[in-house]
Length: 112
Image 1 (cartoon, helix red, strand yellow):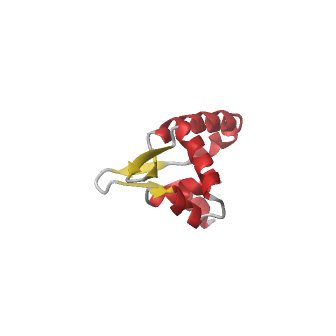
Image 2 (image 1 turned 90 degrees about the vertical axis):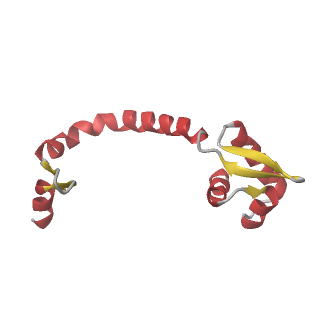
């Protein structure tokens, strides 16, 4: 449910009632999820008249990104050796005049 709330907030800041209209959950349930997301630093609330409008807090996702990068680096490290031959055999040529990167070896394998 929290992912769905974040998806809704990606496009525009919304009030609790507006989020509840878009999702199959009550306003109080949405508010509980928003409080958890706010405590995690992923959303922020701003007063707009008599209601709070919630938006995604992009700075909060920087720490999530660091955690995910560390997680995947550790998870993929054991299989990195399996990819080494492909990396070594792939020849990248950079054309500074055109600013393009091409992989000659990859094209040869794809056409075989």
